Structure formats: C-alpha cells, structure tokens
Amino acid sequence: MISVLFSHIEEKVALTKQDREKISTYFVAKKLRKKQYLLQEGDICKNLAFVAKGLLRTYNVDDKGDEHMSVFGWEGWWISDFNSFLSGEKAVFNIDAIESSDLLLISRPDYEALTLDVPVMDRYFRILYQNSLITKERRLMGSITYTAEEKYVKLAESNPQLIKRVPQNLIASYLGIAPETLSRIKKNLLRKR
Image (cartoon, rainbow, N blue to C red; front, top):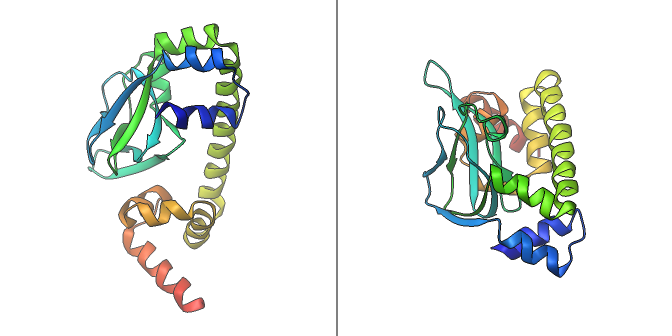
C-alpha cells in the first residue's frame, strides 16, 4: 500500500530513501468494507486518508434526507472533511466506501510532525491543496454555467473510470440533477451517436 502513496508523492516531488523511511512511519493502514463509514457527520475528523485501493465518497444529507455528493476518492486520491480535520470542528460530511477500500491514514498531529520532519512533504501537500482549489473553482463555475448534459459529458470525458465504477444515482447527485434526468441525458447522447 505504501508504494502506491510513494508513487503518488513522486509525481509531484522527489523523495530520498530516507524520506521514504520516515514517511512510512507516520501512516496507519485501514481497510473499509463496501458501505462502511470512514467518517460520519457530527464526528470530529481525526485523519486524512489516502486511497491506495478502492473508491469512497464524501457527501452530506439535507433536512429532507436527500444526499448531496461532494467528492469521490479513488486510487491515488486523498479524502477527508478538511475543515474538521484542520480545525477540530464537527464534520459536516459523511465519508463511506462505495467499494471495499485500502487506506493509509495520518492523524493531525502526525500530519504536522511529518511536514516538519520531511520538509518536501509540506511542498507536496501545498501542491495538492492548490490543485484541489482549482478543481473546486472549476466545478463551482461548471455547476453555474453548464447545462445538465454538459456537466455529464465533461465528467464522462475527464473521469471515464468514475462513470463505470459509480452507481448512476450517485453520479446524478454529484452533478446536482435527478437520476431520471441523468437517464434522459444518457439516452439522448446515445441517440446522437
């Protein structure tokens, strides 16, 4: 599992053998079964999770009981309720496994110690946060400016593996549309081809 993490880190920054040895001491392996929670709304998020294998989702539930998808996390992704993780406030998101998953967890104290002990990790996380901010800005802009069909097409083009792995009702929730609307969009797209 740790080799998947090292591969991901080395896409962004260079690691020495000593860096690798230190990094591996900060993480704890965790397995989740399908539908098992990593975090529930109202709890404090104590860990940042790296997905070595599997697929998770981050979502909240409104007063009517409707789920609203925020993020999918698959191999090579980090997932957490970042506000809760960084501030210690109660989580506003649930995180659970769509597929059985293998994770590497790092606690807040260990995260802070890691970035001091292995300075290149501070740069690595900064790059991740910058990329995450850009992605969220683009998603927000897309939710405002794109039609439902354009949202689906862009998601399918940028993340074809996600479309294959995630149930359609969750894709619809992520796009902010009804499952019936997604079915119509997919039928229309098939007709156009």
